[in-house]
Image (cartoon, rainbow, N blue to C red; front, side, top):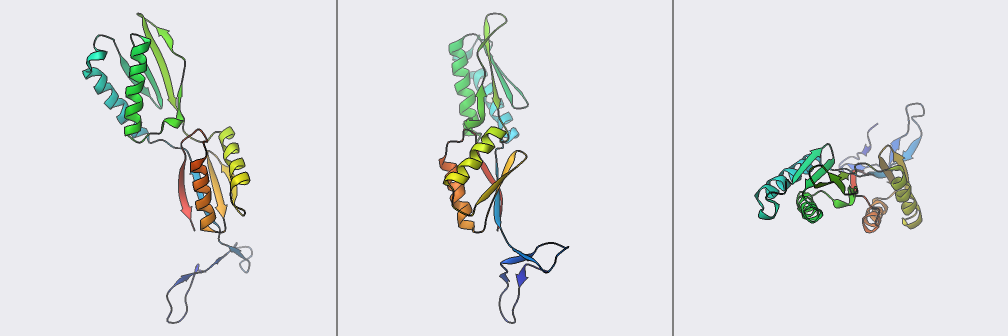
Length: 193
């Protein structure tokens, strides 16, 4: 019942078929290569980026006496400062630290600038994780329209499973999705032959 076929005196070679089910053990199904498309963020790296940004604004001269602060709650970053131009500078510091830590800015969403207490301004930025229903439809449509033949994709929660008979077709899909502007950071995991 192994997927390896062994001949006398020969090396083990992967078999192109696998037993389908326990109910019908005589039936065989061709092995499908697959991978998962996900959109994830390393929360520890976000925390490290915010900590580095807080240290930098504490030491920079242009942020002295501006009551500037950065707060992180889950994947929501709140920035407070004295004026809108300081807020723009604060946003640049946070973005630089996120990029330096390997967090993509494609998943960052900015809320409107709000007036806060004591003549300060506040802005909230959220980091999106997971593939929304709208984005998953866009990815599936892109794979169907522009991808190679024989490739199928289906939504599985907040990820998408892509399957094909040939590994090369999957690599074409990965290249296609990297070239397309989906609007969120994508990672490719669980590659199986």
